[in-house]
Image (tube, rainbow, N blue to C red; front, side, top):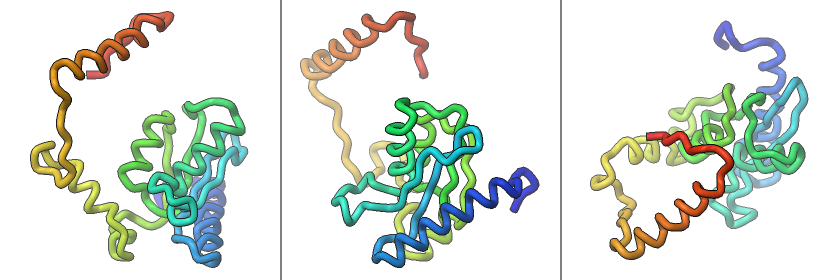
Length: 167
């Protein structure tokens, strides 16, 4: 482990790996994650994609959901995510949306790819220009674009402070 990973970090990562092993022992996929805030585990999750018929029910997302429900918030600027494996693009984005400042993982995305999961393929896909991706994304007509923009504008108008564009 790198010099920045403490013994405490290693303990939490061991728990994430234990969650992944428990999932596997019950017939699930081998992924586990947890979130720690101020030295306390506030959310744990295992991959529940198959059981819940939910392609977003990855371990990291499940841990974020549990932490949010427990702490009654959606941002975790004071948290650390521990994952048995390097998060897929969706889970990495979820960590970014949750403002998780630190992520510690066990197996790499290449290890996950060698085990038959598509994470590396999805990272490559997202690196492609939109027109070269396999998922065809099409923008709406001008009228529908305008209607969608009206709803966004109404939301911005209700905010107590001006929006800082993130361009």
